Length: 297
Ligand code: SF4
Image (cartoon, rainbow, N blue to C red; front, side, top):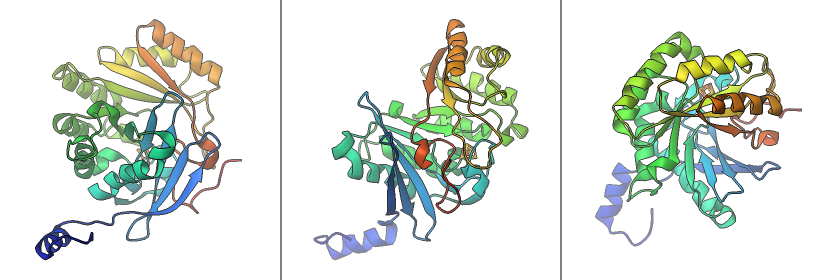
């Protein structure tokens, strides 16, 4: 507790606030400059936060929302841990606060926040909505709502709630996800079509993890164009990050570019995200508590 506060104020703060959510346990640097921060929680669980500098002056912090994850997506290392617990609002916000404190001198300001670390953010929807609102609040971290993106594997009721209660961006990563068994793609896409019609300024980002021989053919590109037709969106093609035990292989870069070109020709806005930080398991789908994984060969 800071010195210099009067006794009543100190008591009020200690009764109502938690000022020690995270402790830095380790910082690992990948060869491309991406940093993975390992944080201990009060109960000794470990979470991971990734700070990704880019050449264009943009630095993104990728925050975790849970210890582990219940969604069990086949391409994801974190999913194999199972869900251990939800993070509190403070534990989520503090990851961005630490990223600023630790790396602003080196990388310049942290410009973007993405909820794409460990966990399915909308499975912890109360705390994620609160955390994202603190991140964009004038009295909070003052990020622009367009620079804070919450990514979901496709929890349909929570997507509706998020779109109603948050002004931050939404990204959907819903291909080869077990959650499709509960909310199939047409339900998910129908919901997005309907909800976004009510919010003409909003768009959704679809994250499409490219898996060799699984979803990267010409027919897959055509199917994708049909599926997202009429939804205001951008598509992010993501290179798969292999990890031990995964049955999937990454699509070669040249095939990703061909796939992208087909989508662009149909009028879609498409970005390609090649892997960052994968030599230190700091890349998308590779996060997991230390000791739970092996570094890829
Ligand atoms: Fe969970 Fe996201 Fe991994 Fe799926 S991809 S298991 S939602 S952390």
